[in-house]
Amino acid sequence: MNARKAVAGLGGRYYAGLFGLLVLIYLGFSLLVAPSKAALKTYHLSVGGARAITISFVVPLVLVWTAGLFGSLKMRQYAKLVKGSPEAHGLNILSLGLLLLVLTQPMASDLSSLVGQITKHSADALPTLTIINNYIQIILMAAAMASIASGASNLSALAKRRNNETLERLLWALGLIVFSILYGYFLVAHRLQGPAGYNPYFMPNWLVLLTIAVPYLFFWYLGLYASLCIFKYQLNVKGLIYKRSLVYIAGGIVAVIVSSVFVRFLATIANRLTRLSITPVLIIIYVFLGITGLGYLLIAWGARKMRRIEEV
Amino acid sequence: MPGGKTIQDKVIDISRDYLGPAAERFVNRQISTHLKKSPEQLTVQDLPKLVDWIRLAFALLTNDSRLVDEYTGRLLAVKQNGHRTAKA
Image (cartoon, rainbow over all chains, first blue to last red; front, top):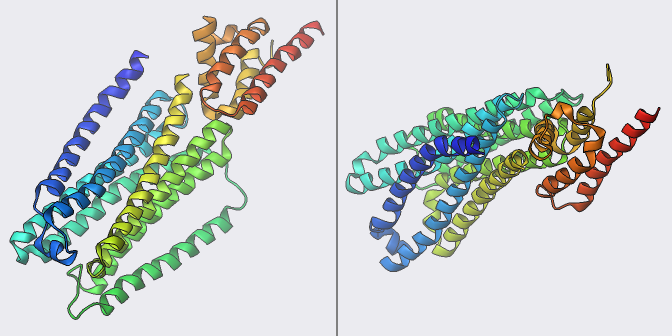
């Protein structure tokens, strides 16, 4: 029991501290910085009204991230509890990936807020900072997804291979090709349909496709592959209670990927969003929060159930 | 019991259907914590007490009472089979 507490406390405290710091920075940017005059004018809001709306999505967002931190730490503790077992290595890498994913969420938001603040005072820096910000966001996601996929792949390797894997691989490839084409088309078509000179990425189309779209698609694919690996692993192991926990974790990762796709979609159509009134914008934000929250809660629930088996 | 499965093995085998890779750790923990003996020393006579503890612990993991009954019923059947083997 004492050893368990030590495991839970030692690593978790550092991660929780870093997470707390990142969240505080995010809260500072969101709540202390004055709302932009352009936004107040566009949505016909008072400063107080804008603050209330900001609080209405910042607080749930922080709660969602906290649920994610809770889930990934539970998973990490579980991986340490089962140290020495065949599944421990895969679970350890997977939990590290989930933790990275959670930490990169406030980190990415802090960075975007910082870019927003700098460009308020120095509009000339907007193209450069936007490009840097976009690439850093990709790197943050890459680190998390690569780790999640590696851990899940390790777990999947423990399970026996099934006969229908070739068909599964073909369907997987087909789905990826179709989604990639649609996403590439959406990125380019949206820009062409926008106002003259509209270029949200400040880069030529070919560079956006090659260095933004391709990495995102690749890491989304890795994340979905990870969920598939976890799902396949649970199909091949015994244990009704254990299997259910893994299904929650696999489902949670899918929901987190879907929310990431949703964010990229919103980032691309940002200019159209500014033409909408405040209500649809808020609905879009709450839908995003709902999907992300569902993802992290499922991961937290699954990890909690797994850890519970080792505690009773 | 040369070549045959021990009571501990049989309990773990059944538990694996419910707890997967965590089964062995779960069963061994119940034996050492509640019966105060090493898992290898588990005997048929220990089974009723062990099953009671397992019922309590497993009920903390699921609200599905049918699943709890099924699991503990299968464990108790090991005792009956064990007695039959002993008589034979």
